[in-house]
Length: 159
Image: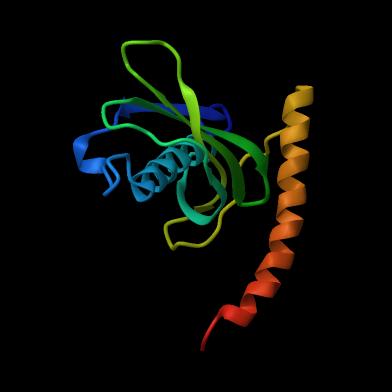
């Protein structure tokens, strides 16, 4: 049911196939997991197929060990007409203990699309708590900053 599930948490074990040359989980694997959680959250909120249009501000705070339990929490923090801004936190820890530490966090923007791949409207999310208002306001400020960064990045695009 669209507009009901604002948050989702994926949980699984980091596997040996996820390892990098340094013996920790590869950052690319973490980015894939982030995208999967973002899709699940956005599809749950919108009730529609969604595509990733932006992933940014990715901060790798602490490495994930192979064998750790990994929890990826995605939460809607702002909605536009067809877009959903999601806050993503990745936490991990030894599965024998309940403690999970923050390893990665970022913002992902997903857009709901129709059967022809055209953007389609999503239910509006309205913050209720003071914390949610801060998250929404931060998403709006980041949106304005991305516009400036996008204009600056044009110098790096080759035609």
